[in-house]
Amino acid sequence: GNSVTQMEGPVTLSEEAFLTINCTYTATGYPSLFWYVQYPGEGLQLLLKATKADDKGSNKGFEATYRKETTSFHLEKGSVQVSDSAVYFCAHGGATNKLIFGTGTLLAVQP
Amino acid sequence: DAMVIQNPRYQVTQFGKPVTLSCSQTLNHNVMYWYQQKSSQAPKLLFHYYDKDFNNEADTPDNFQSRRPNTSFCFLDIRSPGLGDAAMYLCATSREPGGTYEQYFGPGTRLTVT
Image 1: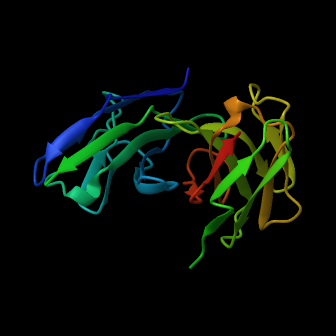
Image 2: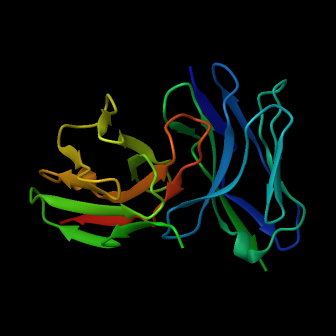
Image 3: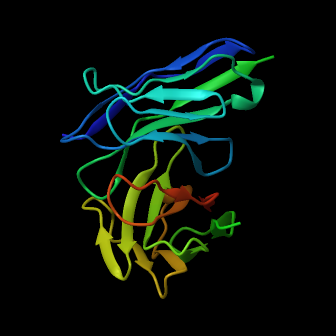
């Protein structure tokens, strides 16, 4: 079936550290892949997306590459800031008309 | 700026007292979604409207209803809130249904049931 698995948090990093949040998916076909970010007390915001294999989505220093071979869409950032502290959700647009979300990963960046 | 607006941001209701949450959008999107999000969990889709067509998720309780009187507005009605319905309720829109289209979320309404 359709599902998304992402690494459990919380992930705690020091400012300027390198970030990786792993995400893998199962799906029929080749769905679009998304990373959403949720800051405390707010709704979700689209961070980046990729619509086909080998596409790289990027925004605000974050990147993720659609890897068909490994069914993965890992989120990376070279140097995190305190303001990046939030919950990050990986999602894919499954065969049905809805997003399939992972469970979310809480990122805490310390000064 | 085009956006998704939810009112109120915080809502307190009593056990069993009907409550309505509101969502409006200026994006002119065809699809509007309602999600329930409990602490430290992913959003759970309750239902969505594609234009005027209502699509309920199989596991959404009958206690939850929705109305979409026009393109811009969509309402979530909880007929008899229980303590377990306390959550953040998120409205989202997309231009068309299907997984290719990104969803735009409102800031959410946090519902407390006393």
